[in-house]
Length: 181
Image (cartoon, rainbow, N blue to C red; front, side, top):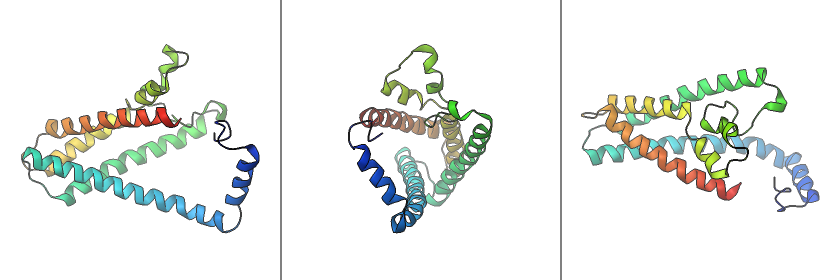
């Protein structure tokens, strides 16, 4: 992508690949990726639970941070396990030539956009990818869980906040995807 975009010459890209696949840089690269991902996941889970704790304080509901963090972690874990199993199945069943790296499961509206438009805009494609079966399921799980661990909170109150947060995230990340792809 960097070569296609004109940011690097092919020789520079080949040199960087050679550096990253040999010696100390290769060892650091193998460790750095999983460690960075693990830290990112923990920070994301803490931020989600913290945002909901703040929201619950605003709406006057009582809860503790620890159960909110537990609900968040289990909801994301459950869906991640299911998505991983489905991805493995898709990898074995689908022809490698037809595999879409950016939408491997095709569980969102972006998977059907080509039927309606030959070349949808980057923003529309990114936004459509947020209308996802797993995203809706995640909102449902979090809403039920947050309402269960919060005193005086209905599932619909929790869901309203999560839906608004999801929509804001969808537009923000779709805009960023438009800028950087």
